[in-house]
Image (cartoon, rainbow over all chains, first blue to last red):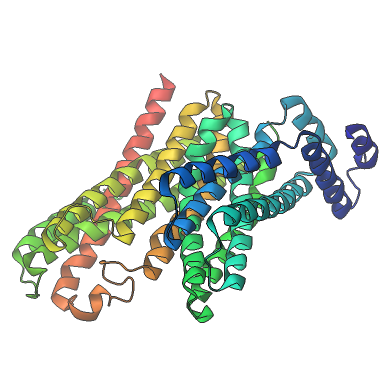
Length: 232
Length: 217
């Protein structure tokens, strides 16, 4: 695969859109081979659900909501942090010489968003199989999960790039990303709580707007800053 | 004289606001009573923090543009002093909350978000400590600083307005100036803000200069 990438990308003058396409393809192939994130999320969801099942027996909708986002938070941090942390130094260097940093960042964000959407679906299906699906406004709840996947991927992608450059990965990743993700998580929990209670949709416009603004900010800032980060 | 006149102004303003803050008349309001005088101390602390963190981001951007180590020192020192003032703001706020809301910490929305914003900058310090190489540390820390700043703004100025909060000006509460910041209080409040910001900046320049001397020896 990497050899193919070399052939396709040797010319950095190649249009950005093609670079992005090949980089996403590479990420997908690597994930499909190891199935690291997919198995990870299954393990997380299954074990959390069993622990909760044994301790709560049945749960109230408000706990359902909080638990769901906690599961999503931890599986997201594992799945997305992998994107930079688990690549070896040598391979990173190799890809950096082939593709432009802009294309690389866009590809990572797009791929991680896709991955998070997939993980959210899997988690949601399994979670609601056991605990039911209480949201009254189902459409709004799905909007909140989609916004959640995008937010997790945009913020964690950049933080994992920073943490991987800093050397010691896992611990730093948690320290750096939790204060950044908490405001987003609060907005998400509020939004999905509104969906859970079946509130009028106009009551949630503030949260949706704010989440979009935070995401756009995070994407723009990471695209601007990554070129400074990617070369040592 | 032409160089340090502003330091004298800062001292005069802070001294004036401290004395006048305790002695001048204030509007008598239920619950707040005399604790309203804390407005002259609690709010300026947060202004100083925001100003210092903005200075830090400014120098982080400059560092990425030029790669001069000097700018990195400025960025980290302003974060250090900003953290000091944020903790002072938290403490003065907690004391105020003890006498008006009943307890030091009541998990009010703005209290919580301010604490998270402070965590963000502690994470910045931790990140710096984790990297040994100077150039690399400066670059990565600058990137994180710029990435964190918009989040800090969202945490302190956007989110608390949407939640139920005991703070004035948040969660549908009227702001302070709507009912009790009358012109007498403005006479003390504005000089206090300007004075404390100048003091904060002064501490930052001192720390920065100290750092330069340390690095020379």
